[in-house]
Image (cartoon, rainbow, N blue to C red; front, side, top):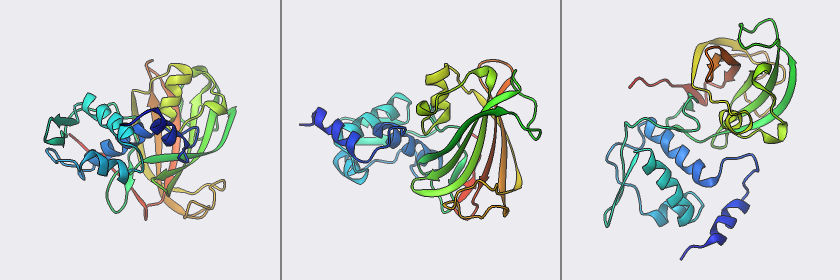
Length: 246
């Protein structure tokens, strides 16, 4: 029998305060594996106790993750038979707009290390967006699982509001929802080449000044105009930009 103590054990198992809850980490990872084709439609999952052990969590928490997948139409639970993947359904994944995946294959779980948060004037290299000349700038080191794969700089228009640093979570889009009631609904990416900025930390393998793949993104929320602009430099030896058409 599994009780509340198991949830406490998960909470104490090295989880950062800004990370997603463990059950959402598992469901997000599985959604990305479904999208990457590593979990195929109709595939039977291992027994729940083995899956829980593989994820280093409890059966109770694992079942919460599976319930999230079932609610999104990505899992069929057959009494006495097991759990089966149902690919192809639209998802409400936290990282649905995160396009970087492991270079060797598989989606991986996105994580982020916040490097700085500042409110500044927008620089001249940015396109026109929002209603203010100022924006909140987030600089982050991005990971897939435990592998550092990108550095990014995100600018949220000052007209959308300000977010205290202590409220920033792994997913900025989830942070926007909780702090500002702001939902990012779509984004436009332009992919090219760029030089790694001088503020990139040493954990990011390409050194400052080197040329890497580079993504410029504009994002829109509920209103007609874009509210966010971002720049991302990623390590093509460790990650690939993937866009699937369905």
